[in-house]
Length: 214
Image 1: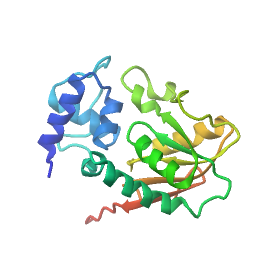
Image 2: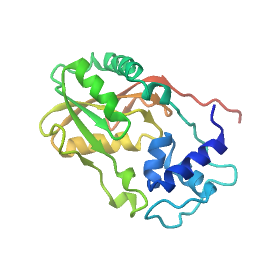
Image 3: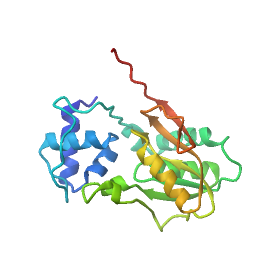
Image 4: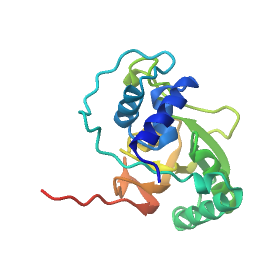
C-alpha cells in the first residue's frame, strides 16, 4: 500500500518526465490541488510550470488516492471491469451508438465498453492535461480526430475516477457543444458520490464515502 512519501516520489518522477501537473493529477488519480502539493513537496518542477501557491497547508489536501493499476496492467482484468461498466450502462438509451473515453485512463475502458455495447469510439483530452501552460479556465480540451466524431449522436462518457466531477462536467459540455447528446457517464471509482453531472446520470462500480467526526 502506498503512503504519502510514495506518492511524492511518484509525482517527482512524473514531473521529471515532463508531465504537467494536470497530467500528474490524472496519472495518480488525485485532485489538482493534491497533485500540486505532491509536486511542491518533491521539489520537482514540471515542464512549463510557474510557481503555484500552496493552499493545502502543511498536512496536505484532503483527498483519496485510487490505485487501480492491478486492473490496468492486465488486459483480461481490464476487459472484465469494462464489461461490468458496460452492464451499468446497458439500460440507458436505445439509440446510443458512440462511447467517449476521457484520456488517458478512460480510453482503454471505453474501448471495451464500445465493444460490449456495439458502439463507435471517441476520445476526449480534457483541459487539465494543459494545466501549467496557462490558466486552466482559458484552455479547453478537445476530441481526437483519430476516432469517431460527435456531432448529432447519443453517447456514453467513460472515465476511471471521479475526483471533483470537473472533468466529467467539462466532457459533457464539450459533447453538447459538438451537437451530441450525453446519455450517461460511468467510472470505476467515484470519490464524490455523484448521481449526475450537468443533468447526465453518473454510474460507478465503487463509491468512496468519507466518514469523519465533527
